[in-house]
Length: 386
Image (cartoon, rainbow, N blue to C red; front, side, top):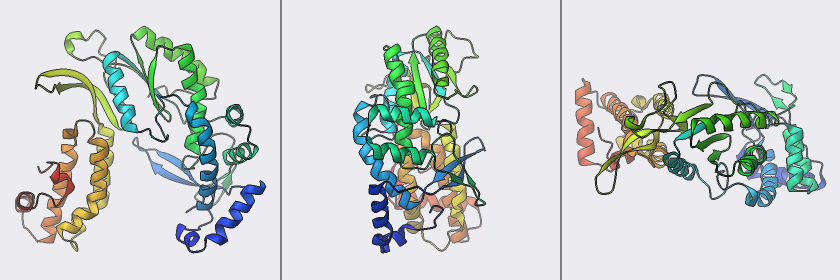
């Protein structure tokens, strides 16, 4: 819920009360969005990222304008832009990244410092005007960009730049901003360069260290003209070598990078005929592993003693399916560490549930369950039984 504390249930029970006034104000140009609610969410480095949560009514209004604007700008986006676009996925970006990392031996791994918080409003509106002259779209996008923020104690702050993460229209505006600031620029000035972009996560593939430095220097100047800055510690040039035999860069040059929750690095691969070879392939990153293990800890599965094993498995099923579907797309075997921890936690649950005296007895119970009822839990079905 946003700052108005109106729930989805309240709107569904009386849509005329909430949605008719919204339609009336939107169509007359008199709709002004309420402040967004600032909600902190933890980041992987221990810091917090602030999400701007609009009210549900405002989300409906944003969806209306977004649907109209998306029809106009979507056909103009670059094919290597994958984030928050219909019929595009993170897995497609990862597949393309793996292919390009095999063909080109260097990567410029970019990190834009506070991208969503630093979008220049004047430039954003200038970009919008290049794509549409519809007054209502321009009017409401301008108002959403300038929507004030309400902090945790109820104080309201004006927004001078940026677009709130959490808004419905924010990803589309962000894509449009980087379409001009990055996609169009690099396609025009460096047409032989290939890249993948998922929102503000960008990977550029180059053929040499010199070319990497050249692109990086040019890009810094380009982004600066759009009030953006590369993170000095997180932006790096990576050497995508396949085997130590061909390693020609110094040890100070990184040989791996993370993209969309996966780590790309040299890995031993198998051909269809069983022959082994070295490739530069993705698998779940340590950061993603750590986040998932943190989720498992927070669930406190060992305390679910009021459930039976089928209820426990059913409660976990959606999360397990999500992890398998996303991270299991590439080198599914790398998920064994996560599911080993899940099995340990299920063993602890059994120990509490059935008052088993030792861990070995509870683990023995788990092995019998896997043998007798292998379809009870989704990760057992996929062979993660250890």
